[in-house]
Amino acid sequence: MERRDVLKGAGAAGIAGLAGCIGGGGGSSEYPELGNYPVEGDEVTLGFNVPQSGAYASEGNDELRAYNLAVEHLNNGGGWVDMWDDLSSGGILDKTVTSVSGDTATDPATAEESATQMIRSDGAIMITGGVSSSVAISQQKLCQQERVQFMSCLTHSNATQGADCVRYGFREMHNAYMTGKALAPILVDQFGEDQNFYSMYADYTWGTSNRDSMKEFLEERGWNQVEAAPTPLGTSDFSPYMQDVPREETDVLLLIHFGADAANSIPAAFDAGLDDDMEIVVPLYDKIAANAASDNIDGVLGTVDWNWQVDNEYSNAFTEAYREAEGTAPSYAARLAYSATMRYAAAVERAETFYPPEVIREMEDQTYSNTGIGEAEARACDHQSMRDVYVVEGLPVEEQTDDALLSVVGTTDRDTAGYACDAGPAANCELGTYGDEDN
Image (tube, rainbow, N blue to C red; front, side, top):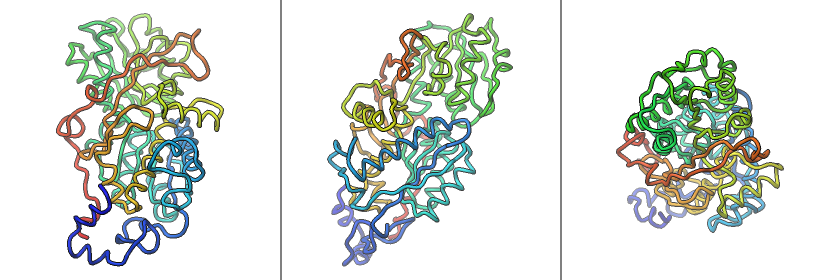
């Protein structure tokens, strides 16, 4: 939507209130104050709230490195800034981009406290971050209340853009429901029909989402869940849980763990010899888990947001820029962080304002294909990007390198992995208000 369309659509009282006011976000604002709008001065502040400690610290620190790279590119050019028509160096709307960072400690209460500091003391116009879905949900609820946009990073629970969705939150990453739709037919093809599976899952919103979605789509294809066993987030010793897996009844073990949890649970499954009696699957892979279990992941299937080996111009440009800055290939947590920052900046530029309702409207129903994952759509109904889902498997040890532990074995297109606005997680989504309805 163009700005002229917004003005055309405003009521008479709104137009009177705008008279004589020009400017994208400075002191002479065309919109009323809302959240941290207008942005005063020559700088604009973004808040990067990531786990720098706790079970997901490795992914969080990858995110932070990519956020800082995005700031560098927005201010000085490089990466996608040189490739996107709606971005140019020199900041956002000619304001130099600065940032503040916080440590969520993989804890919702700590994340909310840190985000509150960024909003109320640092004046952040946008908050982004998250690895744990419960942390992302906590932050986006706060941002809805404070009228500050939240760009989710690594969050995979159905609830994030389902039952707990908010108008001020957007997610590009696929969710557990899409993982189930993408992975279930591949598992049936790989391991056969009428299989019994056992789910071991992290006991919070992300783990329960994956448990439920894998069960739904596997049982649709004739598989049977033997049992689902919860494990506390942050578990270091999984060996007792592995002893409880019924070897005689189980054909496939789903390890629904992530980050440090997965880095501990995958080796524990192999140490217990479960791979002698059943197949092991990791529905959502990540870099730290693959690294920790590199001796055992040959042929182990799962999904990822993205992999640096995905070959397209935007994927390659990001990988090259990140590798030049950090000396290593990026994780998908890093791609998500970089993309969230760039997509927000581009929406501001297109809207020609930092005013949150207009930036949000600019992103809704946007179809885009410039973030390295092929064509995607940020839907207006639930703010979930409908996009392709990548299925990967672990490489044999002799084929692994420091940067390559997984290979992409398939891509489930967005029409197959996606779902309608009245189905799946979207059926439970009520986005809430923009905050300008009464203007």
